[in-house]
Image (cartoon, rainbow, N blue to C red; front, side, top):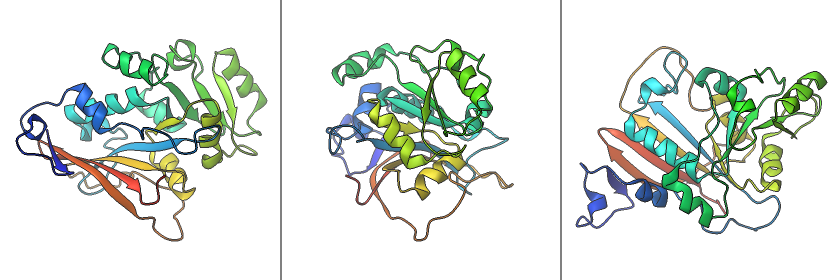
Length: 265
């Protein structure tokens, strides 16, 4: 792996294109801001991690794994290990077979120094709560799974979620989840380093709400054609929002970019 931006000293080992970066190096490259802005209830940093083919497909046969690679999965694991909470939509949880986040010894000291628990929580966003609460994601996580829903969600499904051990977070009226409120509600619980893995509809909602601070996008050197979803869907924004390139890594033709909102705090 090599760093294309920012430009590095070519004499450093990190500039070598044929050397696998250590997990510590990846953690430094993808570290959250050292002091979250306006420390206190409600402050948070929301980043997204997505992968796309050259022709814009975020999935192949409904899953992201076929367009990924080993380096992408190492970055995926690193981003999870740095987060307080991993946020995912219900459909993504079902399609990707989400399981509880696990504690990783390689990141234990770093998480302890940051005041974090052994593993990130997983927060599932669902208005209808059409979820299988018998799955290990709900019954056997190291950190209790959160279910983010609206105040009008079916009462029996809320009860089922709580019975399974999940924490229910109300972040909207009716069955609709307000994405900006979801960010605030999670931050108020001390979950400030936030990572969303989509899917495209959920990411689109965060974008439309102006809640996204950072996008970590893997550009896969593949073409799929077809009608697969883009990385973000749903309603568009009135004016496109400009993000600034923060870093760019490359390995075996895959590009690992990191963009931050230009007015990011």
